[in-house]
Length: 396
Image: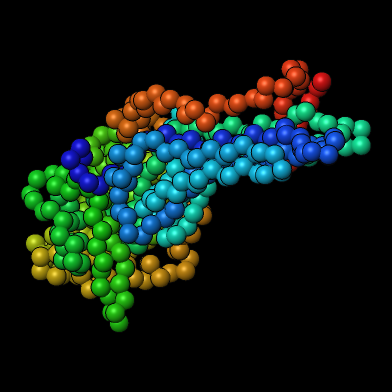
């Protein structure tokens, strides 16, 4: 995967903008004694925003953009002049991107639609100027709110491909061959295991100019949910598929046993995958006769739709498309993105080279250091922001 352009897991460091400090200015003009406070509010810090982009299919751009920092808000000035808001940073990501906190592995948010914007980190609120705190009993407030601090967080972005049908099977089960025969996709096909090193998407044409998306997931082996083989790296993409097409070759020793192994690996990875619609395709069936097909059907689960296919001869391909289309268009089978439960990242679901990535120390910019007025004489004031954006409580 080191030389591949398909990157579906990346760790980055994000920092929102710091809010600007409110001004403690007093109006000064000739012939205007005791002009009163007129310090303006500080500007809001910039947000970190994720935006879905349907034209992106990989997280590769973020592999070379490890630090994402928003702009800081400017401080207020006299004359009730408010500081400028910090610049927001909009990060384009592929549709289907899920965000986790790097330290705890906790799920944060996801982006599923093109143009959808999700505020990942909120910029700090700007401080209120001293003109907000004037009153009949306090006509010269010599204090103002400082801006809220920036929020810095290391996050992990995980891409889960959006497809209608996901192919699930052991290496060399014929998944890539099927995808190449029913779509214009041209995945690498060879007679050795793990030929497919990255997921492939294909548009499958159906009747009356209709179509659906099929995803070829790299082969899964027994123990993939515990980190064995390559399947663990791509099991995350199966969570996004509406229908799972299990593929077992006709020359397998025990077709039912292989199917149960595949189902067990998916269940151990994410128990919610059991609720997805499943279809079983017995590939390479051109080597079977009617008698063998009848014997195999007796051993298959009764409630599982199945079809015998051959990608080389075209046997059963039309019937397979019909079964998949009925499953995709079944209203009871539709899974809304908001109902998908994303399992938190743990030791088995992390990518070591990304999880151990160490960010370089980023120096603090000069404008992050607050400059205080020389005439500041209230040394015992304590600041405290609250959730309602009300003035802070202070002690003098």
